[in-house]
Length: 202
Image 1: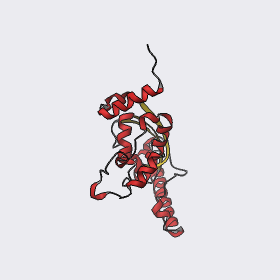
Image 2: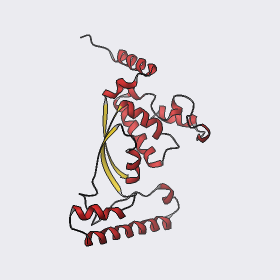
Image 3: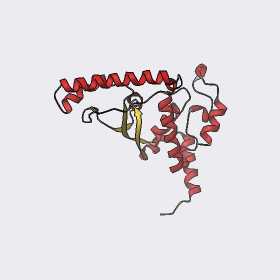
Image 4: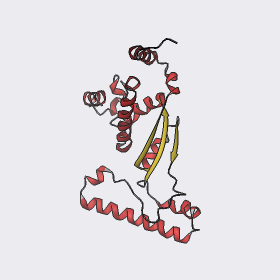
């Protein structure tokens, strides 16, 4: 079999991209280890159905001692009093969780019902696998300034890793405005030049 040069490979990838026959990219997968994110983010991630997820269980993992949680930047920006109030609320939910654990059957059966009082802020970890075609779609939606802050930050870090490992596949990846007109219409952030520069230099 004749070997192809890196230049030939890039030309082939460019041809596929321009033709729109992206089904070819479904044969290449990337797997990510994700931690330090909220269950709120998890709910958004699992809307991307062409992906595989293995998520830390709240049934088999007990939070009797403590649970970690995410503090949204907008709450942190309000100052120390707001953060302390948020932390008090998290502590109250943890106390409710512990109380239900004590009343329910010990072990996983108790955990599975006690977890209903845990907040969306509760920290989780997961393994996620996506093929390249779905990743390109994911980045187009979730790297956009209009995406929720936590998933936008995750998507941007994922794209940075993808560009490092396979620059030819992800050269033009990112929010829709990187490749043309902003798809958000009247809801645009109106910062296309700034966004394009950010993702082209990522």
